[in-house]
Figure (cartoon, rainbow, N blue to C red):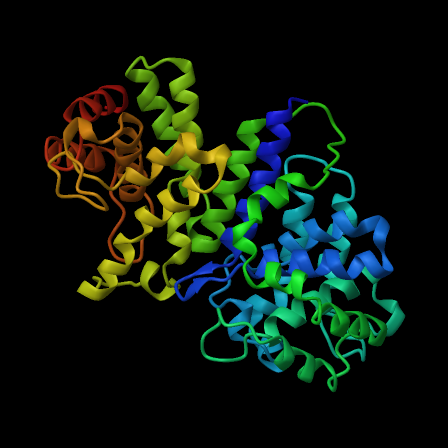
Length: 402
């Protein structure tokens, strides 16, 4: 396996951690903090699995994709159990980790740890109310790391960390293994580690890339990795959106091929199309799925997603070649967003994805308008060629689909 594929896989694991912690109220780095704390705890009691626990921490809330509320906004057990999205997230997390397109050493142990990471030492956790030593050690470590970060942010501002507040809660609620609690108290006194814990984004990607990860099968299908990301983006946006990224990819590739672009460029457009909506993860569900026209304030929130897409892709080396995906809401006449680019200032890949995105959206069910037939959608593209869309891209689109 090529070394750049290994970096790509680690970059994707990092990206999944970032996206599971992105909502309209902030970018929390919860997964990264849990990863760092789980690794630190395991150095004391499970050193042979410290790197595995790091990746388990990164991915522990991947099943929360699609939840309407980040778990940081539901710190209490009863609130979590009563929210079906949160209660079900260990089940979904197990499935998604097992379905990751690349098989790596420890992948299935991670899924078991994630499944049990909300079990409480005294037996009142979920999903199966395991207690004490019935809970896998790796899951007990994750529970401690997860609880520490959640209870550290009980104030209104979820980006403010108060370790002593977390220790005060954990001292009395019998949530975590008592031996692990003792280790946790000592870690909280480690100033060097806690400085890293407070600002993990300063070293995040470099640190993730430094972790050993053994890939067990030699063949890597890179497009399957991008497909997996697109599926998770659709899942978090809304379960009714599953397939939207695939639709955009399908049309984008066909349109790019009709334009006789080089295969390397078509491949880049394919992968970018899977990523084009990643910024929507920061938009509230009530706005994304509102069955009526948006208010001006809501529309301004929606318009920010393309800039968020660019910022996310720009911070991860493996995705910088696909930043153009974030410009698919620019318009040919310069009246689009987020930069107001005009004509050929807009990257060609973005112009193609723009047409593909509109075609898929118009012919799919949306809460705010009726579904159009394919013929009606093509007519809409023609009506907006030269204003919203690149006329040449529309011309080729209509030619191949009419």
